[in-house]
Amino acid sequence: MGLFSRSSEPTTPPVRTLWTDGFGRMATRCVQIIAVLAVVAVAIYGLMQLSLVLIPVVLALIFASAFNPLMSFMRRKGVPSLLGTLIALLGSLLIVTGVVWLIVWAVRTQWDELIESANNGINQLQSYLEHLPFSIDQSQIENLRDSAVDFVTSAQFGSGALAGVSATANFFTGLVLMMVVLFFFLKDGPALWEFVLRPFVGDQYKRARRIGNKTVQTLGDYARGTSIVAAADALGIGIGLAILQVPLAVPLAVIVFLTAFIPIVGATAAGILAALVALVTNGPLAAVIVVGIVVLVNQLEGNFLQPVVMGRSLKLHALVILLALTAGTILGGIIGAVLAVPITAVAWGIISVWNGDDEAAEPFQQKRPEVA
Image (tube, rainbow, N blue to C red; front, side, top):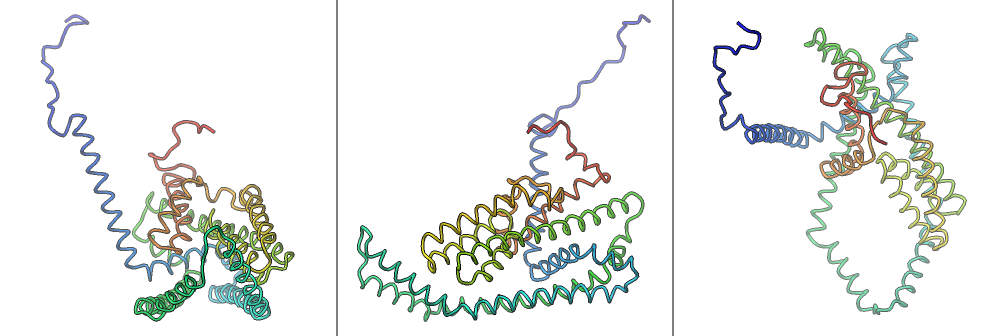
């Protein structure tokens, strides 16, 4: 036979069916995507029904991850787990108690001044309204007041108050559950994780260990870094409010600290609240200065402090953070907004160590250099 002779066996063309052509493959992929989205939707719905249990557990995991370096240090020094857990919890409780006492003290000492300043601000606002291009007479104000009184005495307001009581009860229930879970996470965290890993062997066990370590590292770095950034925001804005002699500077600084755990929008919203208080109590000039202080502090935080403190623990683009915040707020309200970013960071961290310490899952491996 010659070198270029044809084979005697005829080649059979591939059989084309309804699902093997281009459109069929696309339809198959669409069905797969719909199935995945349906499973995700069912999982999210189930988690939302268990939010009273899930949210305290997630918060306890975040706090336990933040305390992990301290607990690891005490374990290396031979401190019993129970004693180390009590030291961490009691230290945190003392800090929280001190902050609450400071807020109550500031409110009690400045309450009369705030009421007087607020009355003056309301009188000024009423005088501004009288000089508007359109007129607002006394009868319109009385109608508005009567509408507010009718709403307060209505059944709708009563049902809302009952819903508030129920939400308060759920809050304290979740708080107690979080403290109990946090206690066991701090005391028996490594043992609990090894119990979870019992079904895994070989490469699966190594992958599960990497995922656990990455989760604790990401949550801990995020909690500690965000706390430092929030404290810097609160300190900067609080000092500015104190210099301007704005009432309730300490409580407003604490609000700035708490809201800073909502990235991008939290500290800004608290700064707007501080500016409104300054407007009512100290006048427009003080409010403008407060806005300038808030902008300056946010710029220093975003350009200098946050990259140094957070490091590479939160490698998420600002657009991803905004989308995560939006989805978290829709699904879980304020708590969802607080938890959305760390959960997203953990998900990306798990993907980044799926196949190794520095080797991401294959679909997410970098195929080409990023364009700046």
